[in-house]
Image (cartoon, rainbow, N blue to C red; front, side, top):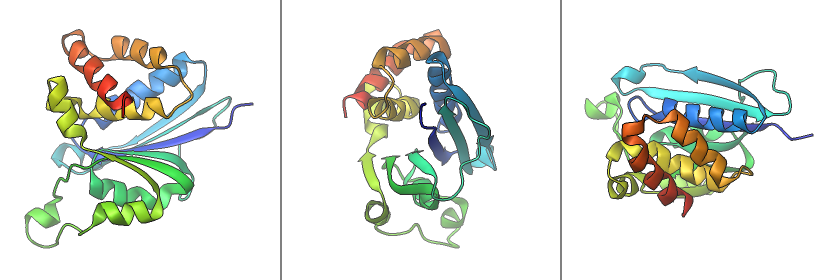
Length: 190
């Protein structure tokens, strides 16, 4: 019996978190796992938080991930990673894009972006931090940050690399496939 895996994907609206969750979900479905997925959009269209819960295993009954339960947090932005930390289980892994996107309170001057946020995350979690934006640029499109991060997630999963690539081929629009395959490989090689 396969242990149920619990993955949270967190980011800001417009970063491609929902496509990333679709790639993850489709990959594990294609591998024969039972999958439950729940998306919380919030104010995603205005740059607000987006959270997706993905659970997969032999039999999954609920998509919800409670505090202290996530095996992995895939974070598209540092502050969102920090906010999600309470959901990570002890010994869990957090894969984070080092990009900073100021939330509205910071933009308006009502708050400040927390200092040393990457260090604070590393004190509480097994942290893998990467400048996924630079890698996406190298791949040919800054919007491929999501697939760079999926490549990193794939590398740490029990699922064969080719299964992820097959899912990319069926999930990503054909006109963006080449860039996304390069982005995936850049993430996978980290």
